[in-house]
Amino acid sequence: MTRPVQAITFDLWDTLFIDDSDEPIRASRDMRTKKGERRFLVHQALSRHHRVTADQVTLAYDVVDAAFRKVWQDRHVTWTVRERLGLLLEGLQLGLPEGELAELVRLHEDMELAVRPRLVPGVREALEALKGRYRLAVISDAIFSPGRALRELLRGEDLFGFFEAGIFSDEVGCSKPDRRVFDQAAEKLGVPLAHLVHVGDRDHNDVKGAQAAGARAILFTAVKNRDQATSADAVCRRYEDLAQIIEQMEK
Image (cartoon, rainbow, N blue to C red; front, side, top):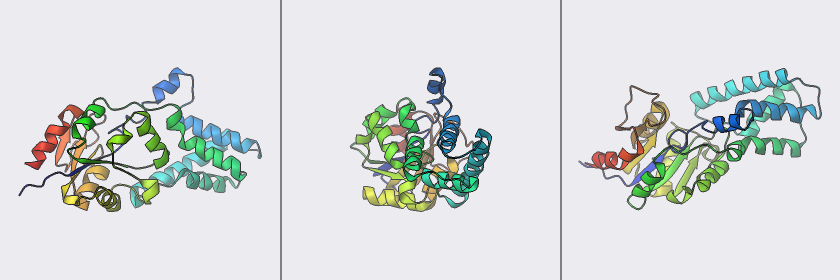
């Protein structure tokens, strides 16, 4: 029995944009790495009000980062930047005026907008080929950049108009592989999950998450080939092949 494809959802990092492709650009401009800049910003803000060393801030930041990853992987939740910085300040037993904390949060959230990552080669042409034939959406975990900033990244590359919906973990309250993100995508696109295909680069989050929800999944390996063993319905190694892969899945 054939299962027509009515909608396609895309992961964002290492599927639409190349994650950390902004780091070489930052280096060429003598800028700190994003990791280093975040710690510098926190130390700079705190130093206006407290005696605190850069090493103390770095240690506290590293502890919160480790806790974030644990919650993200085990509970499928991505804490917001404000929640992460709140935990960091609580651990240091230090505080900031609300206005300065809000600005610190904004600087974290907009860092990818200041120096922008590169698109995966071929993505625009692939979306142009799929638009109109299928309903399209983005499903992305928000690590530091929230849905607000990720939409701006898409607008900046003139990709936003290809998508009818954006499902972002900071707005949904959970992240892949939680089936609720796929349920919401199907609901917003107005299609049954059985007729939705998700494209992403991680077997555990993108492939198994989509399949457990009742959708099909394509493992995308053009940027990173993380998962040699995968349960994906298909593997796509370059965007030039995506339309044909989807046509074959329908047969």
